[in-house]
Length: 186
Image 1 (spheres, one colour):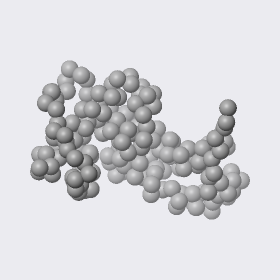
Image 2 (cartoon, rainbow, N blue to C red):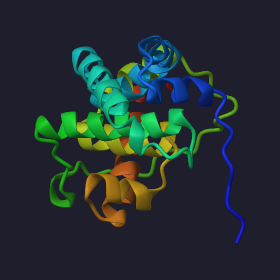
Image 3 (cartoon, one colour):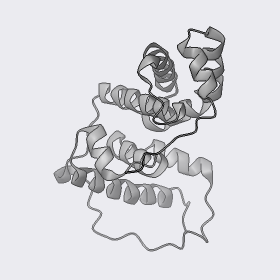
């Protein structure tokens, strides 16, 4: 069986960090802070919480750097820390996955749209995603924006794969409804 080799362009900076070089830590922070903040912001939907998560994630990463074996890039390892800490933050707000009995009836199928012809306004979409209930937003973000599959999402959130799929489906439908309400879709 072939093993995957990852080429991490920042491996030299990570190596310096492992030796206790504070300037290297700052370099890594500058390299990854903006993208990791965006990941956290998409999950927490709260600027202050995303900032807190970012700081906690970097502190944890630097504290646990000795456990980083290099079998993935440092960025993907750090992103996993950020995602886990973001989810913990949302859960601390008493994340409620919308139970099947309580969801709005979306029996009417959303019309089929030609996505290539649709012109999206990025800010409107961001606002619509931010207005989704936490459970919907989390699954939608992890699946669409972070690239996790439903099995991985189920494991991360401690829910069933079927729940992940249904939350994703409801989130998509709710998002379409929100965008229609904003006269975003014709």
